[in-house]
Amino acid sequence: MILTRGARITGALLCALLALIVAGWLARDVAAVDEPADLVRYWGAHSDVRLSAVPTTSANDVALLVVYLVAAFAALRSAVAATALVATGAVTLAMRLPGLWNIGDSAMNARFTDDLRARALICTFAALAAGIALLVTAGAGRREPRDSTESTPTRPGRGAGVTAFLLLGASGALVIAWDIRQVVRDPGLLPDWYVGGDAFFQALIDPPPGWSDMLIALLCLYAAASALLRAVHARPFGLIAAGLLLTGGAAGVSRAVHYKMLDHFADLPVEDRLVVLTWVSEVIVGAVVLIVLARRGTAEAPPRPHQGYGQGYGYPRPGVFGPPPPSQPPPGW
Image 1 (tube, helix red, strand yellow):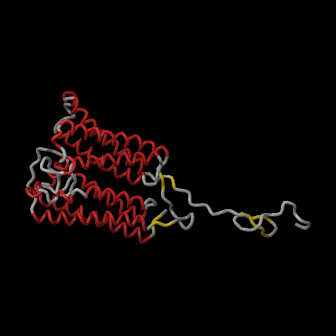
Image 2 (cartoon, one colour; image 1 turned 90 degrees about the vertical axis):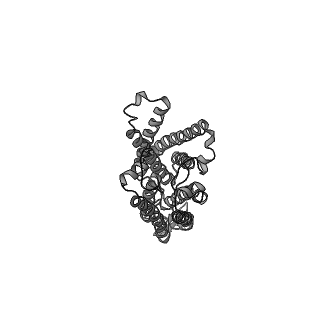
Image 3 (cartoon, helix red, strand yellow; image 1 turned 60 degrees about the horizontal axis):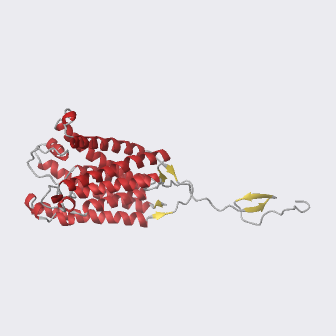
């Protein structure tokens, strides 16, 4: 299945709209703080950074901006445009859904003005509507290729599929393990860890930390299983999962460098060492999977026309319907 031209243009416009929404909030944060470098350190989870204004975004929003821009290009040019729109729409819905109940929460009331919260809620509804529209566009705009010259969706190669399966599967399981450890160590975090509340600070337009972790973990596991089966949708979902992993790992490594955790790695407690190693592994896994899945995969074979045999000029010709030649040629055949 491929997308019609109208569906491609519609999908690209919807991705551009989502990118514009995220870019607007990122620009607001850059303009609100005194030093943009401090905002970058905040995205890197530096707890000692002091900002002149409370940010409304996180590092995930930077990753989403890249996802939307790449998806807009893929919608216009890529053979996997339909699955790219599905993956982008699904991730948008999952990331923005908690905003429906978090933006108006009492914790947000204390940190952000009414005007900011009203704008954030409008943008959340717009993002959710665009995410649904992407799913509808990808489903309604599909058609069969007319001939073998049209580009058909590509699947990851065998080596790429196995590599993505192993790396994304292990990373997804690791994220879930750390999330379980977080909850077991402090059961009082529930339910704020997953649905939001006063226990944790989160950016205005972003989901709670536990919700974000589970989303990344499920994306990794789903993309890993899809890559093992060499499904068409494995590449878009795997690339988004790898991008989010790389972003989180880069933020963690930045924090480790800032607090000299790498310099004193041998002196850290065992659990802190494992945390640092997890951040490093996320960077490596994200980078490797991006490289592996970004390469063009194997194209699906176009449907072969029915072959028949007919009679013409005294010889059977494939592709021409008609009765088969006689088993015993008559005189003068």
